[in-house]
Length: 383
Image 1 (cartoon, rainbow, N blue to C red):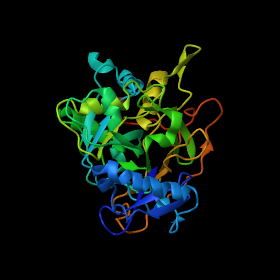
Image 2: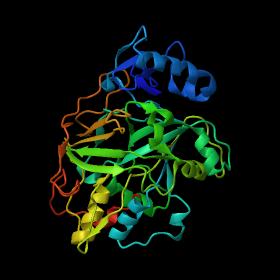
Image 3: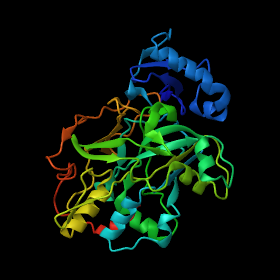
Image 4: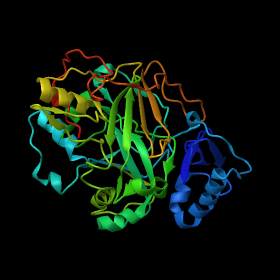
């Protein structure tokens, strides 16, 4: 089942059911107005939504209409919790190695996790609003799960039973604000603006065999300014599965239905070739690209996003069809325009045509400016 939320002028929008091929939608008003209502009463309301979903896919829904991702808010516009982990140890190791830092001893057994803002989650076409390019705007392609109620102390295998929906996320980071925040020893706030979500969230059964042992075994494609820079496999190098991430979050407290738990930046290991490490799957965030450059050439050259830059993030199933729909965002200055308020049309995003990078690998040529950056690699501290 695929679910989205349409703008209607309110903070929480209107819940819609979306067909498998993302072509048709149907309001769920006769069942539930908001996705949180469904999560609160999943066993009762989900079957009714499933029936609408089946009718849509069979062409029998009486009041179906063409689905328009540009009209979508985040599927869950306001969530009780947004907890983001770092399940891909390669990402953590890469950025730490680039700045000469060792991996913590607990890295193999204890996932990193922070609690981000969840009161204003962004839709798939929302602008990334930033007062200054000097803040270091970076995208981060991630996957996430939305849970039902999870008891405190829940074991990781049981925690997987609480997964209700899967999501695709752009966890935007302002890299150059990270070091000062971490130096205070109290975590991220200013360096983490609104997190954006793809148009639809899906139930795990939609992925078939691609959802296995708490991991999504599909590639996540990142296209920066029209150039494909990443096609990282989400399943193969995910050290901590979603059950383990949920259990970590619930070690000392229960999680309520509607909690969102993120995977952290999707990352694949490098491959040794002629005394040089290459990363054939590219990258899911610019900080990782800069770490690659530091390890290969001694310093980073790829700059962070500039005003007017665009990012597209998408996951396609084994049949080639889009699973969640695409995230399409543009970086804009705060004095220019912000992301559309609920109930207004989302800003259009240009540059969504994928152009393959030069043959050999996705990371060979960056979509951003390739000039020496004055920003020291010590800013790559967000893991």
